[in-house]
Image 1 (tube, helix red, strand yellow):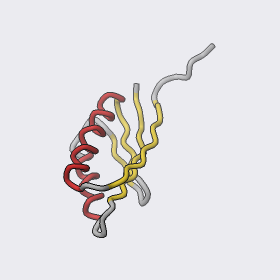
Image 2 (cartoon, rainbow, N blue to C red):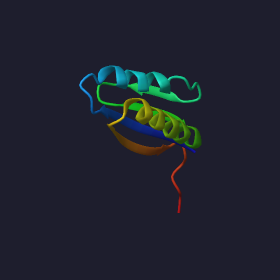
Image 3 (cartoon, rainbow, N blue to C red):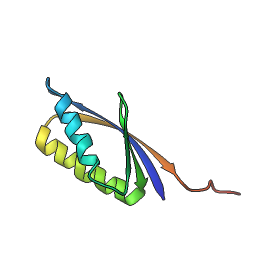
Image 4 (tube, rainbow, N blue to C red):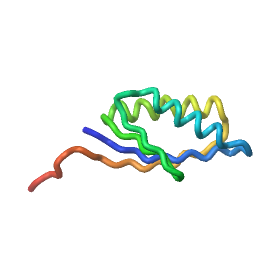
Length: 85
């Protein structure tokens, strides 16, 4: 199953821009997923298990490095045919 996650990061610090860019840079380490960034959020798409493992690791590392911050996440299932009844 494929999934696409739309994620926005809001560090609760004055100098927030480098923190966001560092998080996005970490996402680009993985060749098996697609990462697209726009002015409001970043979309991470790929195999369900891999996307969520990456998010689990990336969010933990970000909290440990940065401290207080907010992540807003939207999740979409993609790539499968709808159930036909």
